[in-house]
Image (cartoon, rainbow, N blue to C red; front, side):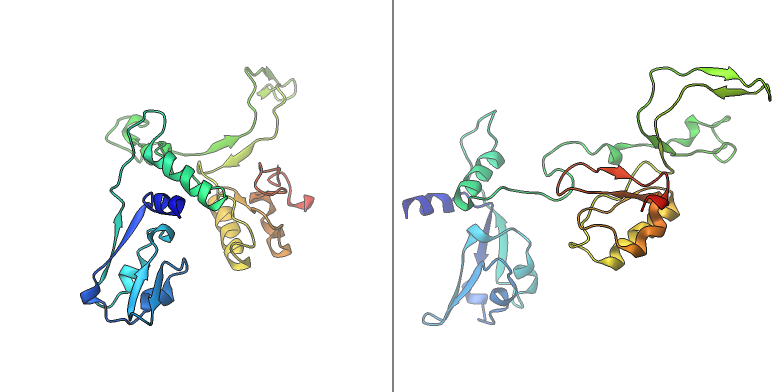
Length: 245
């Protein structure tokens, strides 16, 4: 009990319920998938376990009288340059549950997202700078191993320059982004079909994620990357030929 009492103070969120406003409709109990709220018939009251709250605010949004407010836990830890409050709280959560904390695609930490900081300034690629429509601007990107140097020779028949260096396969993206891996099981066929079609239309790549590739998506093979292992690196690309399917 002592461990549980100590651990409860490390919740990330606090459920603040104003009992005079509560009409005992129990909508908070019914809608919460994390079982934060519980109605006690003997006392005719609702109680909450803030340790289970993830801060989605669904209960406060659906409460008809505004009796619930989700607040950030202001209790702090001793300052430590090596261990932030988030690190310490996560350690307690993992010790309490025995599980590993996971996040969705991306990173929940404060690392920069470089795409959000890109500035496309057309005036720097045109001449004169006041005419941005005179010269084309493209975001085409090639993925693949690049040689340290290349050799260009002149073709004996056409007398035109040609590349003599053998390049490894290059994936051409019309825009510098791809559709991140989302498993077939997590979504559905219609969602995967939409992503594959969008990747083909945009000239970029779509990642199948786990669960294999449905035969209806074979026609998008040139714009598909197939993931063949659970939670690991993407194994191969079909950009060279959809016939490999």
